[in-house]
Length: 396
Image (cartoon, one colour):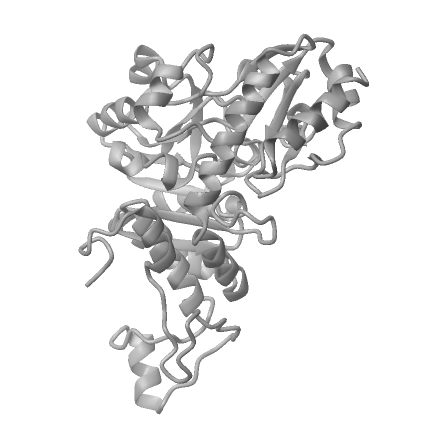
């Protein structure tokens, strides 16, 4: 009986879904299957596995117990049919586009996306004959008008990196499906603990598992979950033959992180709300972007489709880039580093770091100004995070 059939709640599923108990030694924790290849009992078994008659393992690029356990657990938590583990978040995003689109196809994308995704769209996909259009997908009229006969997919990221702009997943999914387009949602900022895109109509969900899913900043990885037909299209031939499979050890660490996902996300949310309110009332801060604040333009949408408001904050400082540079250079506990979703707090400047490769005009259209700062609020004692920010503000 699987975990869904047993009606287990999220935290229980995060600990037990897909777990493997070692039959030989009785290990309580799934062992690390750090092997490149798997031994066959005889030639007939080897032949059957490569013919698809035997589901056993052949070669880690094609499948491994650790990657399978991680994929099953993430898919279960997202209420998805199946999942795939990749070696980076960008390989997961790349596999989605290459596995679901072909030369001559067109897709739509929300106007504010992670910088690496924008670069993939602008500089890579066109070489494969795949074209895309950035639009405000929340504008229903603009979205309807943007569809072409060859539009096959709508790609969204909500909350958006780094502005925290939200996309109404249910509304966009309905319109996209009316046009026979697949909906792909990047749910990295919230995870399935706080938002379930598939329950709202999305067909595929993509993650950088480097971030909250793992939560400890000690792996790079990606995950794709969704409806079975789309996962099958992505897995073979693309994932397996382009060599983007996640490693056994990183997958083992990912499963380790998933076991505390709910606990960590609760603390991230609690701390972020307190930090956001502190920043909103600070005289040196121009504007704060956090879905949990009543001043956030899409606060009602956040309450509708999110369980809580996440651990990510963006804010503008009075004094622009120079003020931001002074703040970032004078922090002690909060690390000046890209990435996000780790147990420790991280801060960075998107325009010169994660989104530096995005043309200025596109950045500004997406709301990424030179004065914008992105803060990933960790699970430290929140008083220490706020005190660290205050010491930094004193240098402005």
